[in-house]
Image (cartoon, rainbow, N blue to C red):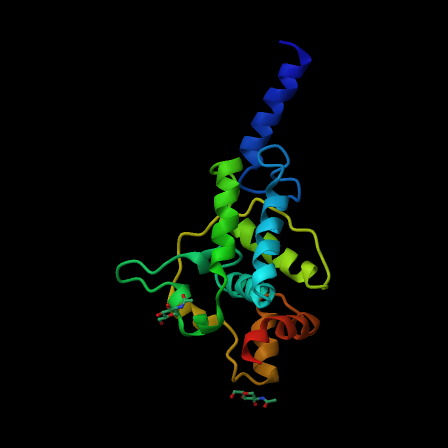
Length: 193
Ligand SMILES: *[C@@H]1O[C@H](CO)[C@@H](O)[C@H](O)[C@H]1NC(C)=O
Ligand SMILES: *[C@@H]1O[C@H](CO)[C@@H](O)[C@H](O)[C@H]1NC(C)=O
């Protein structure tokens, strides 16, 4: 066995063992190097036609992460008796799901079955904020898509009627600070104003 082969083997074995654990900004470097670019393009294209897209995407990410973590459970449709998050009362202000669908479609053409919807939602929200003149941040990738989505759990989202102590508590339970609360409220309450 030559050294290159050993290296390759080691990489494959490591990838196998760490696949389910480590999120990394380089997660798709080998399997789908254009992933970031493809998601950016989908967001840019949608923004050009609809100025509410950035707010919608960051709000979608927020709604997704608040319930069961950032696992794209917000995208799942209701099935049989199960009413999904999408159909919970706070869904009224959620839209722009088509941007995620378009990004997913373009990604499937390039690298089928590789990029999770959870990563697409996270990336789309980051670009939406950055492309609107907000800050940018590194998105660790490798999130797995959730299979459970329950409308009733949208009750865990902070209600528009919450007072400041209730808001602080609700955000605090998810490790979000007062600073996070103010920033996220500014961005995600756009559809109410
Ligand atoms: C929101 O939920 C209602 C039912 O509660 C449903 O009719 C509507 O299509 C949902 N909206 C979106 C954007 O999913
Ligand atoms: C916020 O609402 C909760 C629940 O109704 C109440 O117990 C609390 O005193 C309120 N806090 C403030 C600052 O109004």
